[in-house]
Structure formats: C-alpha cells, structure tokens
Image 1: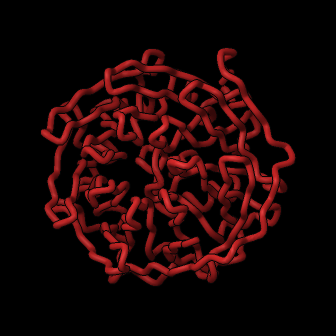
Image 2: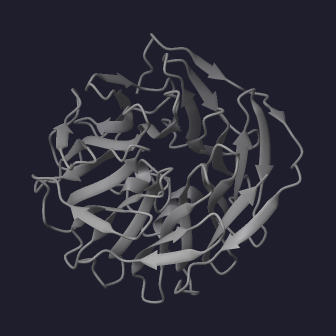
Image 3: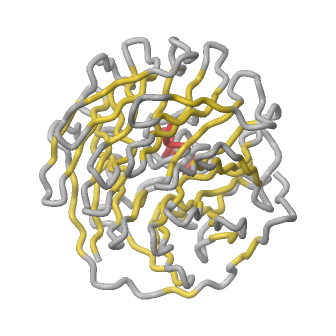
Length: 396
C-alpha cells in the first residue's frame, strides 16, 4: 500500500464514496477515497509532459479553515472539498467522536455547520458536504444509523432537502450518493442497490430522477456506473467498473449520450484504470489513472477527446482534482519522501507547487488541494504532524 493509500485510509473515505468522483472526503478513489476513480482509445491523443515548466511560488495568502466543533485528535478535523465563484467553500468535519458534519464557509469567512436530519451519530456516520454551486447550494450525502447513504441539498438559506433514489439499497454502504451540482441545481451521482451494484443518476431541480447504466459496466457486487461532477451544460463525468473490476471514464450529455474512454497507460487489473474527478464549463475533464504498477498519474481530457498526461516532475504519484473555467488545474502529488504536496498548472502548462503552512512532514502528511475557482483560489486541507485535518484557502 503506497502513502496515498495510507492517507486515504486515514480519512475514513472508502472507494465507494463520492470522494472517488469529487473532492469529497478525499479525492483519491483507489486509496479509500477519492474517490478518487485499460487500453487507451486510439481515437484520442495522449500528450505527456516529461519536462514541464515550473514557476516560483507567487505572493499568495493562506487562510486556515477550522470548522467549529471539529475534533483535534488524530483523523479528526476539517476537510474543505469545494469552492464556488464567489469564494464560498463547502466541506465536512469530523468531531471528537468521529462523526462527520457538513459546513458552509461564506466568502467573508463565516462558517455555518449543519447535519442532515436522519444522519447517524456513530463514528463513520454523519453528513458529508461534497459540492457547492454558484448560488451557494451544497450537494452531498449523509449516512444514517445503519450507515446507508442518502442524498441531500442545502440552500444558502439553510434549507435541507433529502432524497433517496428508488432502487438504492438500505444496508451499510448502499443507497444514494450525491456527488455534483451545477448552477441550475441539477444533481449528479449514483446509487448502490441491494446487490452492491452501482447505477448513475441525474436529478432535476424539480426532483425528477433519471437513472442510467454505461454499456460495459459490470453487474456484480462493487461493479457498475458511478456518476460524478456535472457542469452547467448538464454534462456529467464519472467512471464505470467492468466485470473485471477495472475502471473506465465516461462523459454523459444532458441528452443522455454517453462516450466512454480509457487513458493510455492505465492498468487493466482490478482496482486500476481511469478515474475522472471534475469537469469544467468547457467540458474538459480532469482526474487520474492508476497504471499496472499501481502508480498514480493525472490527466486532462478536452471535450474533443484529446488527453494529456499530467505528472509533476520528481513526484512518484500525481493526482489532478480540479479545473476552473480558465483551464488552470490543481491537485496533489507524492514526493520521494512519501510526503504530499500540492500544485497548480496553468493552461499553458506551467506548474507551481506549494505547501500550506502547518503541513506535516511525515509519511502521507502534507497538503491536499481539492478545488479551484474562477479567480484561481484553491481550497483543500493539510494533514498536520499530529495527523489532524486542517482546511486551507490559498488566495492569489
């Protein structure tokens, strides 16, 4: 198990969670989170930057984000996962008992915490904030007292609406996981049925749910279709798991047309493959793939299907977690010392690496960047030397 896997295990996020497809509890799917999730199609072009340009860290401001009530012991603390155009941030925090709660941090810095009605109160249960749209509505899911999942939205005024997709199972690890929301309020995610098979869904603001399955998705336990982030055009990014346990990427338009793909170099064994995480307004998808050696590599895929490998020079593993409208991406990587650092990469290919003040320097500790907004502000969390999660906002 590599350091990414160790870190992801520490966050209590499993591969079956939205973190695989969004920056939820941790955007490293394979490790236990993220999220988070093959031969490459000859129709696409793969570009590898073996010697990318690097820029010196510019003058930026770091702000620590600590949700009221967040625990201060190992594997507790605050985990921001999304930021909107105005700078409002959503995420989750683990309290002193290991229960998760959602939070909303306004652009002025005011933090409001919340828990969905029906959320469980035992360690590993509770409420998870996943995405926030430009209207301030948060989408996520909560785990009930049986650890089954249910989707929800929370408006900027605090109104929470819970929902469960018909067909979702009621046992631990089953149910509905809401992973994305666009400006119009359309939701994307997946549900896991009573046989532990995943199925994608989209849900309109009026509550109309459409479910779907990608051709080629397996029909056995821990297989199926997982819808993730959604852009303002209604295009969804996600992945499906075939009968061999390999992950493949897909995009689904608002009209329901699905295009599948696999990044060249992605492994073909169970647990390996292609893991899309986020999609911007131009339809560009970013994520990562796991190769045959279980190493991680970032990628970017344009709406035309052109795929570019993203690897930070000197890193042993690289994961891309977010992209803004300008095409600037962010993510994190594993160093040769097994610590984690973060980066941004401009649309022209220039990398800037960074560490949030207070980041630990032990194995699997460091800075995890999850999301970037139009203005270039980045949010995520860092693991301290005591393995406590602290949120951060990096402002240009």
